[in-house]
Image 1 (spheres, rainbow, N blue to C red):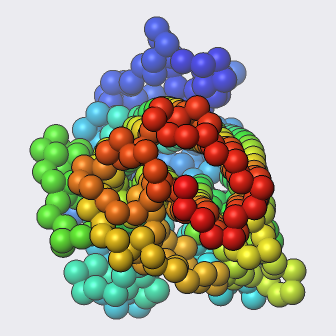
Image 2 (cartoon, helix red, strand yellow):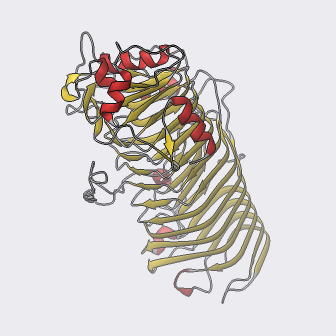
Length: 540
């Protein structure tokens, strides 16, 4: 365990032995945390057992008043650890405090209590706090935090630790469906964990089942560590919005109906703030399994309608007012999902991004880079953003759908300085010659999704409105013959291609160049070197 985690756990009242958190025996914890027990002068109580404050843990009694009382007691004592022994703690909103850690012991479940579809006239989850005039710039889920199972705002130095479970069974997921409550109704909760304007936070070693709109929503949180979470959910897994200095590692996220790990930079704080200094490492994201079957070990594949792929991806965007800066994504595994997305459509500055050491199977599009002009934000300051200095390397993708990878800026605002190397892209192929002649619409102001342009005239990579594009050691392969060129370039200024391999060992017609300047191709096996100062419309 890293030194900073040791220090945090000591501060929070968790003992550390042999590099791992020593879980407390529940009877010992209760004996140390009885509220009426005397405390000798100079001693400090550090463990606060929720059952000592009246929590039943029987799955039906509402335990949130007792849980909040134990949190208050720990905070009033200057800090400590609130312990959940084995049991099922049905709860409404649990309010986090500074210098207090929650420890969910083995066999402990925090259960989101149910509410009617139309909400409750009194009681239930905390009321969704009012927003300012910036509310229309992001959806309802991103605009509110208090209407959650567990929430904290303007607090610091706290954490939630496992190995227990958070089960959002009674939460809305923000869709208008009668099987779950209406997200905007009074007393209804829609997120498992929501944090706003916090600092020095650790979330580790617990599981989330059915997390509602978001399993974890962190907005304006600095110095955030998320490690070894297992999230099996019915919408987004982890959303990191307007946050700085964030480490996400060793997480498993199954989210068939929405994104797995999703950094954003919305306007939800009332101003544009970048998400920066973020790393995502050693994570598995998928949209392939039925809800709960990853956590229970069944790994039962979900039956999707024909042509649909579960979402389940890592995506930077769609909310993108502030920007994404200094981001490293490495050693991650994607399976049966939409692939990787990097998006700026609301004015965000995107720069200094690496995406490396990634494997993908059965994805819709291996990668989708989009600089667009939806421009959802305050006017007139919201203008088209930038995307530059992006490096992608050591990527393997197999069984991808017929759509190619997409790199698309907008007219007069190109994506800049993109390097792609050591990549193997295996596509299903099978497209006819009619698809090779498609002229995709710009759709500059549309919601960004890989399907936004429809069918595309390339097998491997479709690139439009780019400046300074470099590909090295890239192979495009197809399961079935495909009549489209491997690469379609449109409005590209500066393109270097070195040591490529093409589908079916093709020796010609693998490049379509439209308004392309300073193009160079060299070092390809069985394929002639080529240079073009400028090509209005040419096939090579």
